[in-house]
Image (tube, rainbow, N blue to C red; front, side):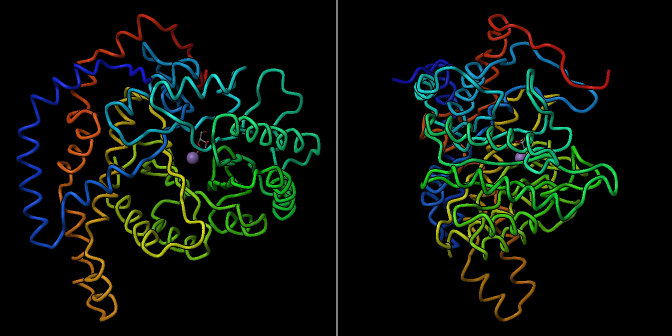
Length: 430
Ligand code: PSV
Ligand code: MN
């Protein structure tokens, strides 16, 4: 029995007022696509099958280095975070899984937590370890790094945290561990660039050896931050080296915001797929060197091109190809529920557009070096307004045609502001 946070009647009434207009738009788009030999229902069904996880921490307002602007009704524990994730899924219907982050989401009873999630129509996705900051009472500081620290005791502590995450994940029904470390340096000469990678690999191998047979270990690279001179797993090359050394069930995870500006991320997707190491994605957008902006808000075309490669990969799968998708963005000025819904729609929209690409025509144009035709074939799909397909997919699954309108009408956040304890002022320069 699921117990959804927004009134089902409200969603139904909201949809009833919009159903006719949507049907009209959907039929019109259907006729247009049919002229190109595309069945709109088939695309809609693909969208319905597709899903992306939301990170538990992303339901709260994040902070920049400078400030955090808390809002009333923000969640302060995993139970409240799950409730917010349930709203995102109830209205949007493309985010049925939550990716928990530890140690933040620790509880005493994980079987109970899994049940609680199921009651809200959710399940758990990849577990994420976090060893980039110290926790109260922690024996060894991560100031010198974690899996690559120069201190053996600190490395051991980081290994144990990752192994604990696997154990927790087993109880939650997860099948993957995502490892991102902030390890690196701020000064040339601070650490030996080669030896720090050796230490990382040695520690990561111990985590890998604790992986259950049906699990995947995902390595997430990041160019910089919190270390600003060098990061141990800074790019897809380092990530690929590590994944290849660690073993078959170790793969690379691409966070869209973790590259130098203007890097051709879609080509990285193709390269990692070639190596059979494309393990997952963290979706967000970026304007400069950040990894925090809402997915598709800055460069929706790049997101489309990434999905174009993913659909190619889907059509030409390598053994074990089953990427884990998660939204990974930080909200400072929006309601995180609205941002997650907007991003999930942008991501699913790119998947739909990439599914519209006439692959045979594209490949033929590529083979015959008809550059303009190849480009226009992609562009035609990108320029298609897939809004009616997404809305219809939501409606048919019980979600909201107009998720923003329905969410605001529900006054969910106002109600939570009455019930929940306020968030304390957090990070920032004080
Ligand atoms: C690091 O910037 C990152 O992208 C990792 O995925 C972390 O899990 C997440 O952000 C939260 O710090
Ligand atoms: Mn990430």
